[in-house]
Amino acid sequence: MSGPRILILASCGFLGIGLLAPTLTIEPRAGQFTWLVELWDEEATKPVTYSIFGAIRDLYLMNNFFLALVLGLFSILFPIFKLSLYWLVTDRHPNSGSVRSLLKWTDRLSKFSMVEVLFLALLILTVKTLPGGSEAKIEWGAYAFVTSAIGAMLVPLLAERPKK
Amino acid sequence: MTDLSDFDAPKRPWLGLLIPALVVLAFAGFYWFISSNGGSPYLDSPSIQTTDGTTRQGLVKGQTYYLFASEIELYPTNLENDPWDGGENGPDIRYRILWQGNKVFESEEKDDALIADWSGLSLDLEWGDLMGKTISPDEAIKAARIRYEKGGVVEIVVEDDDLTDDDDAGRAEIELDDLMIGKNEIKLKKTSINAVRRINLRALPHGSALKDLVELMK
View 1 (tube, helix red, strand yellow):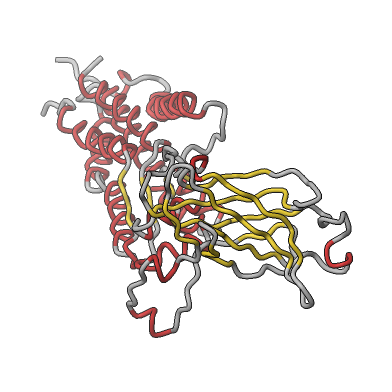
View 2 (view 1 turned 180 degrees about the vertical axis):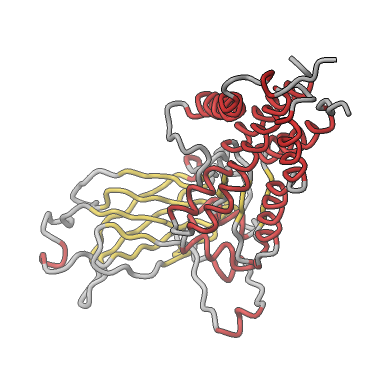
């Protein structure tokens, strides 16, 4: 098995784990009155941990279909599609006609190579700017997810280029 | 020499397209299997982290503690085995803490309840305070202040507060040696001088930060 293919499979593995593993822990705070809020509603200030899949599911259950769709698209479907395409490209002989067409697609996709990570960063940034000292902690699932994205980004670099 | 064409490609390329998706699913499934322990398939959907990992400690000699009852439950009948308040209403529960022969704390009254609870925290806030008032534990905590000495005791006197005269619901003498920091559940038997079924007594170290005290009150 070629190097790029091993990298694709490893990226798939990291992606699978990264989607379900804890990604983000949010610790809600209400500034100086956090303790008071804790007394009124103990659950309101307890840390909550989300996985990417869990977050999408919750967005869907909360009727935020658009956000669920966007997050699902860019964090699940898009990375899988990208890796599938890379797998297909590395499956063909470099000089075959369909490879050229697929490579066009992969070139287009590479422009969005880190879009899923950008989404994750945006989410963390949003939580961090909440008032009252609320904190967002990145969990290990986020690193698995980012590793998958970086792996996918490296595949075209390792893949054989068609001979001219 | 020979120019390779699409004939070299697998006959069903879409099958290859499925492999990465299947690998993703396999790893996700594997992770789910090792981490779920038979639980929900929705891993790490909002999950609540337990904060009850603290080690329980006994009281330290010479140190001052806040002491209050977070919950008191009475038996359904009073000392004479009659329903409370003649069966019309539940008892209006109030308790006092006696230490070294002195009343060191008296709670607010909880109306018509067989189970009464007190948070131990109470604040009289004005709107202006929300702009940045600093609150000290002494202002906020409604509890007795006692010092732990070996062999020391406190007495909890529970009453049914009536308009005419207050009825004793029972009293419990509690040895401080038996108390732990945090929640202490004291169960009592119904007798001719006691109609209190249970007292949840909280002991909190004096001088702790409010945040720590709130943790101990949970």
